[in-house]
Length: 93
Image 1: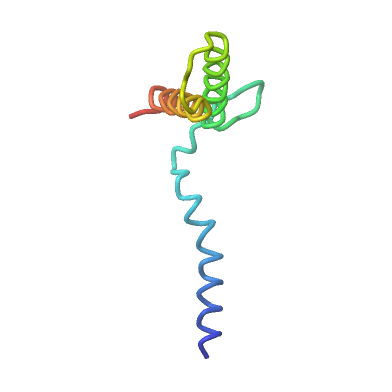
Image 2 (image 1 turned 45 degrees about the vertical axis):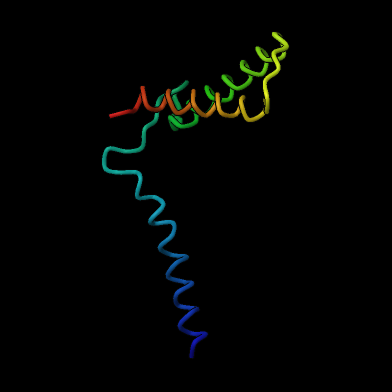
């Protein structure tokens, strides 16, 4: 009897999960922009800007030979901050 109850719970979770995940797309739609005739999600642009910022930071650290502790963490943090700031400035309320 317990197996049937847990089976039903698993099925309900499997069906409800995707529906709940799509709840972020409200009536006004997900933020997107047209690029060469195709719509791309805005988070993709922000992620690309963050990756470019991290690469530029890495090049600057190597070029100046500055002793930065944990350079991978510093580059990742700069990338996340730049991507998040772009999202906040562009799509902030």
